[in-house]
Length: 82
Image (tube, rainbow, N blue to C red; front, side, top):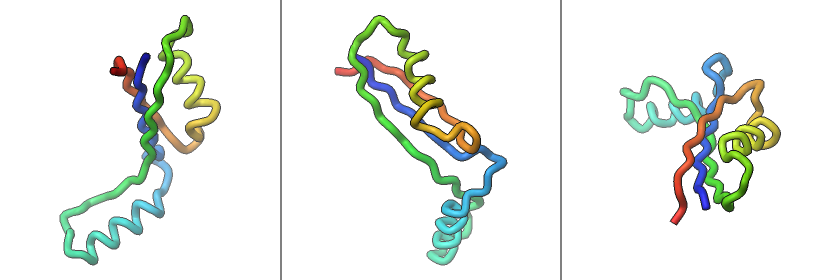
């Protein structure tokens, strides 16, 4: 069994209004050192062992469902599950 951690973030060229709102709130709370905030998603998948290549399967999942590839980037890590 494999555990896959998928990290999804907005592309640098895409404005992040939610991140801007969080940064404004942090500044209001006195955390002026915060320069930028980008909001993303974290997904954790448990995959059963299969003959299909894990990397290929995860890329397909990300590009077909888990991300909007027009405005989001993703990366993933695969590790053995306990």
